[in-house]
Amino acid sequence: MLLCTFGCLTSKAQKKPVIYKRPITWTSERERLSLEYLLKRHGVHADTALIIPRMVVVHWTGNMSVNATIKTFDPVRLPGRKDLQTASTLNVSTQFVIARNGTIYQLLPENFFARHTIGLNYCAIGIENIGSAKNPLTEAQLRSNTKLIKYLRSKYAIEYVIGHHEYQVFTGTIWWKEMNPTYITAKTDPGDKFMQSLRLRLGLDKQLKIPHLL
Image (cartoon, rainbow, N blue to C red; front, top):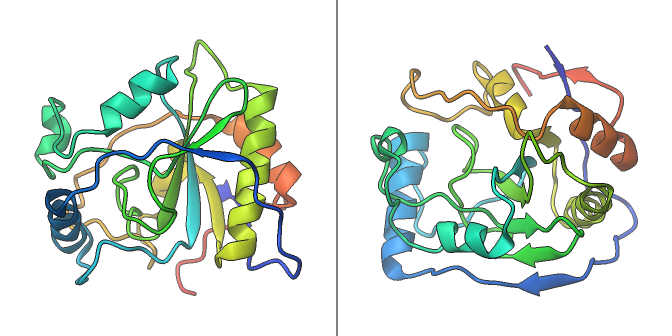
């Protein structure tokens, strides 16, 4: 399967887009559960729940509300979702949410651990976009994702920009760190069309195979 190309720090720093802070709850318990997740799910021993960002994973929320999305991510422990609770009681979350009109909200610092993509949380910044299969992501969201990711790529050594639906391509590579090989969920967000347009605007449109050894 062909996927995104890799990038590196750009030679010219990108202007930071307008970002509104909407912090979710971060407590000692959330830190403890995040460290536990890093160890038990990713095999990563850490003293703090910080990541070194190496990729960006783009999602859609499945609902149409910024407030509802943030409310979902805010609790420290995962309410419901027994399929996910088997892996951890740590709630799902993300670093960024982008509204239908392109407004960017930041829920966590860029390098704080967030549970949003199986096998890759230890190195991935998550961007959730308000939308769904019935409500495709907008041109305004495409512009904001582009601006935000260009900024992140100028700040961190981001090597991959992928859609959530593409994450399983990393299984079998050195990037994949999920201790349970059967813990996989099927995803469709945000779809090939959006990711192709996004990577084109990022200058990452030349497709490369995911390397098994780097």
